[in-house]
Length: 108
Image (cartoon, rainbow, N blue to C red; front, side, top):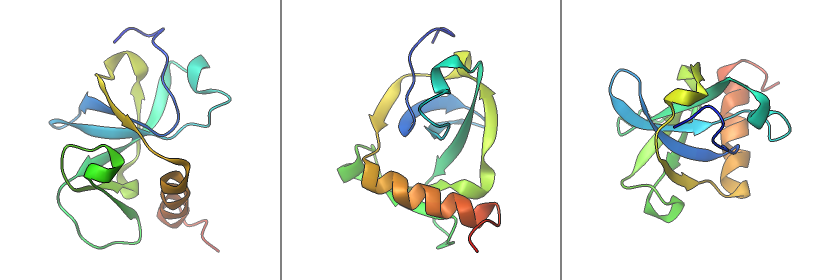
């Protein structure tokens, strides 16, 4: 993917981290297209039942059931992002934001 390719908040894309896996783009919509590095959270099939996980499945457009691990967010160069898988619905992003708040200790 080129650095000028449009990406969107809540989009799920392939990325080769420790292995190739889906990641969810987290940056706010107002700036995401201006950034050279984007904040992502990896998806994994290892479900631990943590409050920092958000379950995704086929209804979300994912190839299989998995969780977004908000404890493992990282910055990546947007040029490393692979093909788009899906974009998460606004309701699902509310859950992502709540889990992210727990992960960074901003949940009150």
